[in-house]
Length: 194
Image (cartoon, rainbow, N blue to C red):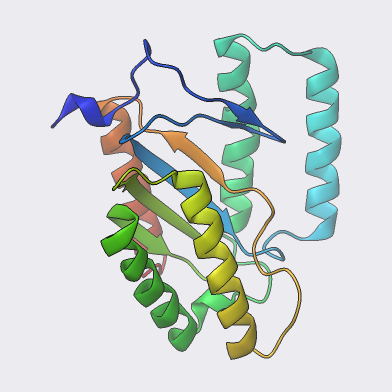
């Protein structure tokens, strides 16, 4: 495995924050998860927001690496479990929508990123990818989600925001993390992903 694909702890990570940190380094493998906007019920979102607020009050920024790990282990894993329950309209569970999504993803694959692995679940998607040709992965994903949102909305005869506002992304840390990501994605395939 080419170690240059993984997080370089000596290189700038270009951290961007809104609700969660986004670390970016050119040419590195990224594990990205994005979900449909209705994939979590409002009571669960409210509960999660309250828990996050309490946690953040008890853990003011800047966070230590241990606090960041605790935050993501607690909140990210909880969201993953809820997503796997298949809440929401699950438009990606429709064959024609999933086929369109994969086709469009592979178009971007040939121009802006290299897809190493993917899983399309009924209400969310996991991608393991790497930006190519000097592309900014964050900007490229934004274009991709905008295009697919427009077309999927037409396919399912709806209007409005399709995707969540903020995807989860993480630079693959090392070979062990890479193997864990692939195992996790494989479990999603076992649960009915494409």
